[in-house]
Image (cartoon, rainbow, N blue to C red; front, side):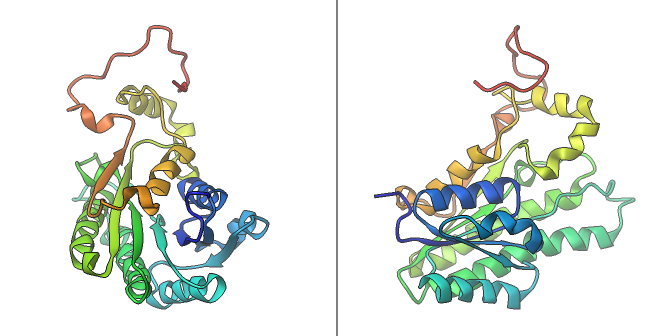
Length: 265
């Protein structure tokens, strides 16, 4: 029996990157998946994937989140899990110079979107047998980065929404956890193709010596959505290549024969 047989799971931000990798992995392990993204055209992959349906969703809209949960029930007969992965990155400058409009945009997607996703999925789950919600946080929610104050604030808020929701929803049999990625190869990080020196500087801070791949993050989400993590709720799981283990004063040691591009250990 596959690990996720019988589960119906929503995955937001599923067009590319970590969201797509997670949706594909859950489906491969037996789940029925509603893959959602604001860009419906980018979900073309879902239209031919077994056990997956694609759906358009603006996570900042309460109506869209409610409709997504209803679609899962109407199509597959229930809702047992949700991976709330949709989010926005952004720089925008320091707190003295960045626009508050940019701050509002990031908070709207990253914080309001998560809150609405938990509400919509949780309201369905509490009428059934409970379920598991896993949210994409970030190592940037633990500590600060230069010129990323609005993103830092949003991801810190996400982590405490996860903790607070876990406390509130445990009585309904609903678990809420978060995964905090470190540097990961996704379309969102393709901007580093134009900044190879910054890419390399970030790589040097990783104890693993390389950036992560989306399928590696998908494994963490699979674990949290599945029954093996049934004793976990309110947990913040760092899947960050060891960047958070270092206090930042010195770079970790590197293999002397390391090639210039990230390698797989």
